[in-house]
Amino acid sequence: MLRELPYSSTERLDGVNGLAHAMQAIATLLVMCDARDLGVSVGENPGVRDQGSGAADAGSSGVPSAVTFEPNIYLYDKYPGGVGLSEPLFRLSDALLENTRKLIERCACPGCPSCVGPVGDVGEKGKGVALAILRGILDSV
Image (cartoon, rainbow, N blue to C red; front, side, top):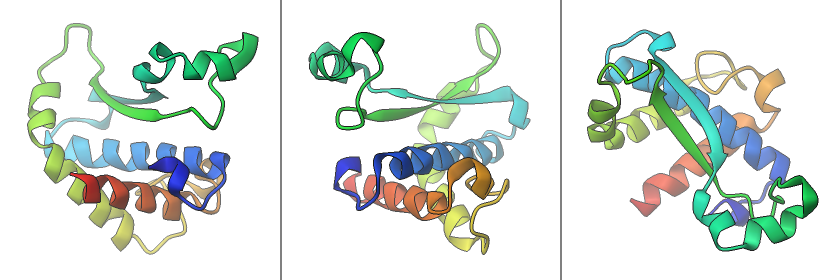
């Protein structure tokens, strides 16, 4: 889905990072925890490297090329062993996606810490790209 978006690979990655930022903000509200209780990380889909496409394109660095990079957003309980935030958050995944969409759409900024993060962190198109990615996800579920 990402490759179909009319943005550069850098803009798409900025959008993914902005989406991750917004999802973390909504997730803390849904499970009623402190923002420091949930971590967020963007990583490569493990299946891409297992198929051989990422490693071949990556060269010796092991970093996947923009063509094969399929990012995943991970929201996780930041405490070793967990305190029970992941399971309820998983059950609330539909609400997480829908409320994240509302947050991004309704925030009148070009990018701010309250939605996708500051423009300096996510680029000038980060908010629009994050919303396009999220709409694609919502259309596929």
